Length: 275
Ligand code: NAD
Image (tube, rainbow, N blue to C red; front, side, top):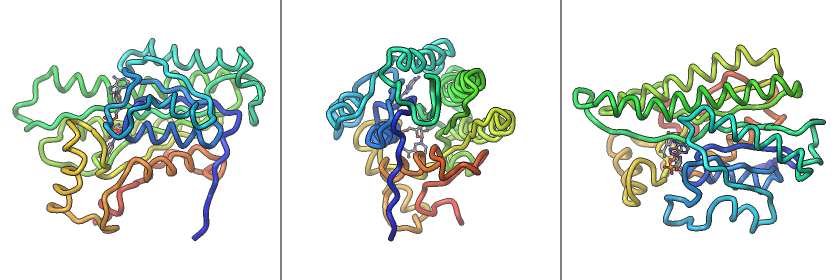
């Protein structure tokens, strides 16, 4: 089978929630592909017990360029500050070799940060509902808005990728708050794609299936996610998903190879949602 090597040399990529799990894998992969990576997370250190080195340090140890910007994605001002930081990096000269653009700024925005709540609908408090929507859907909306505005103002195009989920289209028991955020992300992606196309900004989403991360709970959740799902509905590719399965799909959607793809939600789920 063929191999594809992505080249993001000279480009600035923001990944929200890049300290852990899927976001960390995405950030590391962009770092390997030559991008300057800004990890925008509430914490620098990973929740993942298998990955103790902070993401930006791991990228730099690998010869790349990265920094951590403490960011709460539920705060629109914090997201705007990360986008501004992407512009400053270029002014500092650290990113002056930008391949496709003549001015500094964010080339790729990955709105990935997310949290999970599992609770029977009748027991969900309004506080819990607002908490998850603040981070998952408002965070993605505002991430698209600040990046889209910056890309429009810069006038050199750009790419936005949002992390959706199989929950964007498939309801699962005790997941109304979470599933409704992921459904919203799918439509934010489609709407933003429609509105930003005239600015040469493509907007797509990846929809991971059950991926072995620390998501939602402690370390034991990693294996449980896979086992529990195997019992309910088999995964056609017959193996668990890993963050490293999702990252290349994001790089593809961010690359010129996907230059005619926008508004798309790409499932990375081993075939889970096809039946
Ligand atoms: P994770 O818990 O390993 O990573 C989430 C990251 O987001 C963490 O680093 C965390 O610190 C960060 N974060 C949380 N709240 C934040 C906030 N307010 N501001 C900034 N950063 C914040 O989880 P993961 O599995 O890697 O999930 C990443 C994304 O993938 C989420 O959007 C999730 O909904 C989505 N997803 C995960 C799965 C799965 O099975 N793991 C499946 C489908 C979709």
